[in-house]
Amino acid sequence: MDYVIAKYIRLSIEDAKTDSLSIENQRLLLDSHIAGMDAPDATILEFVDNGYSGTNFERPAVTELLEHVCAGNVNCIVVKDFSRFGRNAIESGYFLQRVFPLFRTRFIAVSDMFDSIELEGDTGGIDISFKLLVHEQYSRDLSRKIKASRREKARRGEAISKNCAFGFKKVGDHLEIDEPAADTVRLIFNMAAEGKNYAEIAERLYVDKRPYPSEYRKAGGSEPEEGFSCVWNKPVLFTMLKDEQYAGTYVAGKSMRTEIGTTKHIDIDESEWIRIPDFHPIIVTSELFYTVQRILNTKTEPIRRREVTTSDRYNNIDRPLKGKVFCGCCDHRLRVSSTRNAVFSCQFTSAAPDSDCYRMRISDSELSSIVLEAIRGKAKGFESAYPKQKKANTPIHTETELSRLIGAAENEKKTLYEQFIRCEISIEGFKTAKAPLDSEIERLVLAYNTLKAEIGKKAEIKELRKQLRELTETAFMENTLSQPLVDLLIDRVSVFPDCKVDIVWKLAAFDHVDRKEKDNQ
Image (cartoon, rainbow, N blue to C red):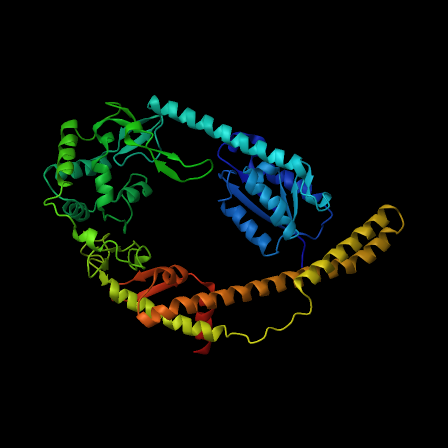
């Protein structure tokens, strides 16, 4: 097996302002360091995260790198410094002190002059912990400054998002009216002022082939290509009709990030929003805007009051498949009704009579029966594909024995190197004695990783078999789905107009069942 060196490069948006941290400069530094390492035949892999914060590990390239490490496919990781790998002290320390030593992965931070192979089993101590804390505190301080700066810009009306409200376009640091989109906005407000409901507005927009906001933006404000979406839905229409920016009021500060480095946001109370009246051009007049608001507020009042509505009466009934059912045509999530005989229906194309999934619906009971029958077949196939072993074959070596043998071989190799340094053996003698040790270590590491994977897989199958039996026994007996069973097995369910159902399973073991069934056909 080749010696594998992984280069990891990260550049955040703020780092892009510093030339020394550019991706190309990091790559040159890492290549220069690798060239000086004693690994001429090594396989070099490169992982790059461009535009990602180091305060968390929700980054595609670092996730892929860590998967390679856990699979035993990486021998050495090289980064510019600790901050490139991560700015979270706890998570970074966990990988440096626990994960990488466990998988015998060498870690090198070039600028910090850190090489884990020189620590001889140590983890770097307080020096490394202090550096990680400094990097984390730097990110927190920078985040607070950026947040304060953006808040101040918002108070002056300068914090205008690139994805501004539909009907406007950003020009420099101010908003201008995007006339084709603004014409659609005016139509929506005028129809709402006439008392038209959301379904009627959506139907008119579909008939006129007016593109959905996201489709309009994809086309760059021009006429979208053939096949674009012009199906509007109630949430988008409601949000537009409540947006006071169309009447000329600048609005900012509606949400904020939950924590540093994440893309998740939380809504801010409306009383804390930043508003500047009469700040930019208007698309609808104030009179029209407030007329629509009065209509919307009136329509939200109940027509007749009763203690328990239909929705309240049946809303607490368990619907295990709720949230996992999608339309096989438009790929939107199907909504389930809160009624006694609940049905899943595609609401997205309710205003598009010429779509394949127009008014498509399937009852919850029928869908549950189809899914339960599919689970029954999968459970039976699982028992055939993974029969219970009466007695496991005893391996030649245990994990502990293999780990001890690897340690002994590495110590022997270290002793050999020390003899070479003390000039007790020649370079030729060193290379001759080192070659079989390298081969033996490689063989032992492969055997160790293989044995560990087999033990893990057997334990996983055993636990899965236990869970399946416990959950399916009751489900098959009562002929009903349970939430734990659905959560364990099903990722999503796609429904098509002819009641054809396609199930995406969560378990990789079920994919093996499918392959085995195909092989037997």
